[in-house]
Image (cartoon, rainbow, N blue to C red):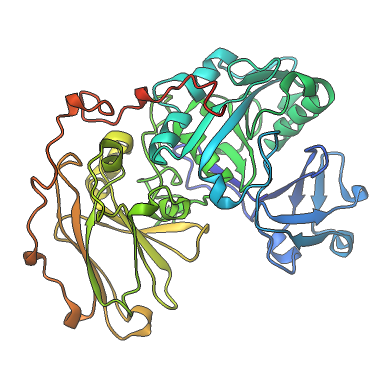
Length: 478
């Protein structure tokens, strides 16, 4: 698996890895995990796909530290890579092979493993961690349910000695000597496989490991296997909803969301890297490219290839509108713009309210309450934010798809709240296909006004409220 990470705020300008970082998990008895050291891009002749490539590694190549040196000439002769079917395997009795589509929809259970050695333990007790993952008003589980349009639901794992989704494990290793954060995971897996299999059972799909502060994470707050089912966290960061969602996003095959020169600099969504270090912060969703891939709003997607369909005028609403029932059949949540030889673009309307009301204050004036455009070379790859359009603003791309004409994406207007409506966006290729914004009226009164105090999903501050979703959901998957 390629390892994805999110940095500690203030340290995101430092590269998390000099090269792509991969780990291998044994297909036999779910362990151990082996770190591949060296330049994997040079080593492998064929593309390796995170979560799908199967490696055959002779045991004599594995060091005592559970690493394989890809720069060793012997490794080149023996290690083989074969891409298997594009499906993921999740551990647990509830988890047969699932397609990627199935990964984004349905009910899944999470096992949280609180890892301690003889001296060091995570700062939060098991019951507090359970609250931070499953029970608090804002958690990864409540926010995923909201952002996914109630299509992706996580619940607590159960097991003979699993308490409210959390299992405490004592490892024999001295975690102060863990030169890599993965050592914390390996030590926990070793303890579980040798002493606690029957205590945990198999009623889980994903595993979150909460490691003590002494474990060396570098500048990372958490890490996760891309397309896998494991994520691991640097102590208190494992209780922060933003960090939880970011790492779970990597498990779901979401790569980073960048902006400018920063790999994960997009401040509008979870797969960026801009967040506050709080357990009650993280009311954000994913950007347009990720939402389109997940398909959570597929009934309200719109795809246009401007070289074949010259223009379009789109009614757009943000992700809060479906949650409040303020959406019509012709409204769109995500728009995909495709062109031959062009990176695919996606855009959506962002609102600083409800389930998307959190954003670092430095970016509110430039990114919030706008139509945000991102580009992505292909599904599942990293995306990059390229424009944030306010009312009357326009994005242009010359010589779109080699046509010799300029692509225009223009925001005609944006209603003041999702209670009243959305935005009107026009797309056209070349001046002969121009759509004039003066042809449209504002959306005012298009929706019957919903008093927020009469809407069970909104609180007194016009914010989406997850209280109606049972956070203490032991039976969600039954």
